[in-house]
Image (cartoon, rainbow, N blue to C red):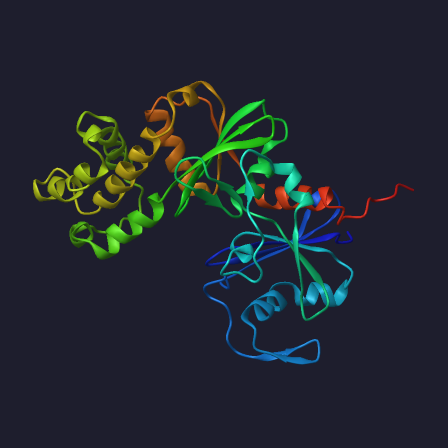
Length: 319
């Protein structure tokens, strides 16, 4: 099957490359640890030029051989590659924004190979405290097809996003630094001193953390309840291998407590790593959110749709 598009999901820590065929079928994919904060440094020759630029080196490693075979393949990229610290900055689009229209606002940079790399712009919300996303807007587009007029999309991760979409337009979104705070507390605070990693998910401890966040104690805020991750251990109510999942449930519970009650009656779609989404699905059920489903391959589908909107993909002529 002939390839039609190279799609890149280029974030802070990793670079995922997809070679897509007709209808967006994934023909081949790669994952490299060369996000924008971990670019290669060893110089090498690219297109007859000795190259020292980390972005060029990472790009060539990700898909140089694909372009050798098909130099005419269009390339589209989303994520932090378009940030101020990225390869080339793609200006934010302000909410409310029709996510499909982002395909008409791609930012281009020409690589050493002479290939134009089309970068998807991020989205910014400036009502109240400013909020931004890069990469999540593409995932949102990738899951919208076939959904109702109003949906809440959750994207768990280091910086979890909750995106409200109405009639295909991102109208509002919130960011929760849940994953990063969990990592920092576990590695660099006193809470981690008594924790012990477990090979098994400690479901009971996780559920307890969620319930504490939703309780009267939880109303005093996460800065109050966090210390219970230590004191429940000191009083022998949590074993060391239960404490990490308790902390996880506590933080996720506080995050979900920030969602509007109206969301309990509308569809919620979760996008992200399967194991993490399963935690969120479990916590959402405990919080009373009944209409939750999981989506896969959102980024690839979103990049394909944006490339179509931009006219990067030639239509396949039927015989």
